[in-house]
Length: 229
Image (cartoon, rainbow, N blue to C red; front, side, top):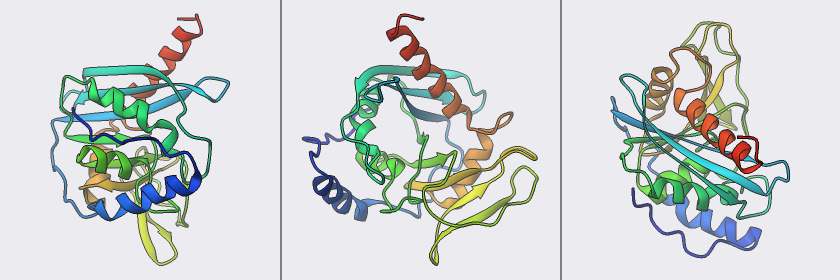
């Protein structure tokens, strides 16, 4: 992959918010996106205990078998302070560098985080989707914004995640009787399709297999860097 260059990283909150304001209009929230992507990438970042050192991982899976086709993990450092609503800036340089080293092109990016379900409507999935011009979705373990009703207990049940009057995502049950996940559009996808792809990627566990494999990879890298791998 060849993600768009991001230029000099922002140094202040005002500069970071200006970047979000400039890129937000480029988000395609409708899609519809690929109905049956053959390759899907999961992206995740794990942090060392100091909260500064990190490992960024990207795994590309075959959606038919969920076998890993390609994977890249890179050590790095957080590129921005921890500021609510601007968390993506900590991880973007490392994730984009990892994406740039892939040899298998993913048709869809699945981010461990949020897209439009974000206080500024521009979460990590939106940012990566715009910079790579790839369909992207966010799958969060917990919400950043919004209110919702508990979805039904069965796999596939969902309820709208609303911030004010706006539907910014869905609360989706991926396993019977298991806590739901929070799905939102990042770029070039519809919300219906985003949920369909998440269910496709969760045949056995709560989280998408893309997220699980990327999480495994970046945590293993941190252990290696600490001398425990």
